[in-house]
Figure 1 (spheres, helix red, strand yellow):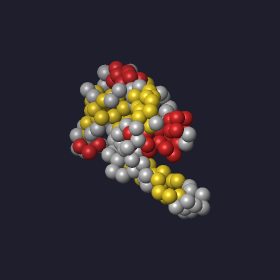
Figure 2 (cartoon, helix red, strand yellow; figure 1 turned 90 degrees about the vertical axis):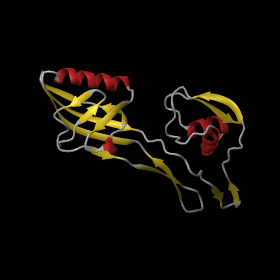
Figure 3 (cartoon, one colour; figure 1 turned 180 degrees about the horizontal axis):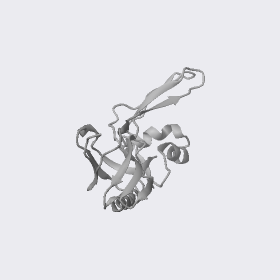
Length: 195
């Protein structure tokens, strides 16, 4: 592959071997409702991943491997630039970077990067229950009851189950807090729980 690839200020020379694998899936939620057909909701784009393998060659090969390992350990976003494919140029985090030292000036590696897309929510699911034929809508009119600080591993479903009695009320929390992507909660983020 002839494209010039930079990760932050690290130049991959030679570039990736053969190909860069790009994966941009969508998340579709299936809701099984007793007594009726299952419902599906498009949850939007899931995490985008880019991966490739190759060699770091030259007197600075080992130093580059250590730099990349440090970027991975820091977990911070870094700019990826792929010269011939601007649509692949994104802010990314390094998910994995296994590498083998062949010689001090020749490192074989593979790398997987994650670029998260934050979609705008255009509509919130409206459900109907067939047994009572009542319509349930999530609106922004819910009022805040208490504040909650997001911890590692939290989901809106689990928070709704704990504070509102059922995980199915997660949309109320999302609407109240203008959360467009419920899969992108930030640790330490303060949210309001509806009363």
